[in-house]
Image (cartoon, rainbow, N blue to C red; front, side, top):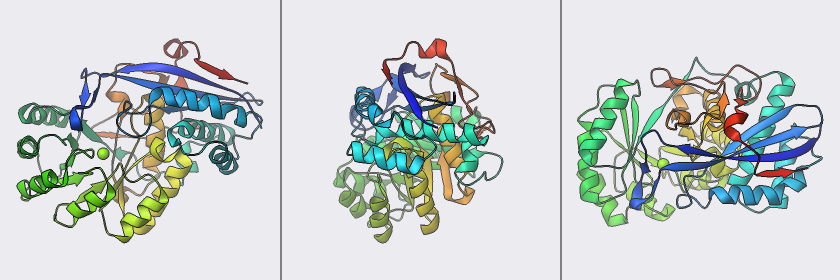
Length: 367
Ligand code: MG
């Protein structure tokens, strides 16, 4: 089997809430997502998606996905998409870094492999655990009272895990965490995610100010060293996210006991192949995970579900259903939330069929 053509579609994904705000005053109202289509000489076609959280979150931006694909795609024409390891080696040889460019191609190749073998990707990633996976809901940064109301509302929709976007003023963030914690019930889990937004003195004040709250602290500061310093000064459970982008990063952080949980995003590490490698390493090391991506719609949510549901439940802290945050559906068959949980498709591959009327004309076409 050979790759004969690679196309990309650009889709705008507006947020149902109108806006998503996180640390440092950063926000997005319409996500710019890229859906990649990999055609083969056997008539089987695979799909993948990459959707950076705007240009100011990770070193990634939506136009960069398309520019990178234009650079990378000619190297991939004629390659066998079911030989995923050699294909990843080839992508890494042809382009240094830029994992978010490679991610949708890698996902599309898993989609093709699933369709060729007649198996859902969750089976190919190791096999399905249980009936479904537990979701968290991200709570956009607002006033403490508004965030507490949002948590109560999403709790009524079935979510039991909440990730508060903090990383603003330490004083307000302490109030945000207390206001939300007051709304929680037994079994709920609360994460305060600063998304690198605090300086060390801010973070020290926050972890002291919420020391009596049952809350996880996620990526308080920009650098690994700053985060490690805060970790060593708090008894609260600790999550690393933005600095965990490779096997090396996980090994260093594990050796330093720098966190209890890592947040692993598919496009941050370059696709399902590398996410599986790091996921399996974390399983071996006893490190629980939030498995997700930077953002996306139906294709991203499907890829997340396959990765999450092939992970032992006790090591899956949470995952997320981005397709429920946005007003546009790009494909049929994607996971749909039920009572704060979702399940990977049983159909071959990702299990998502594109809605071409939504995708429109391709913005990139290489053959
Ligand atoms: Mg995070």
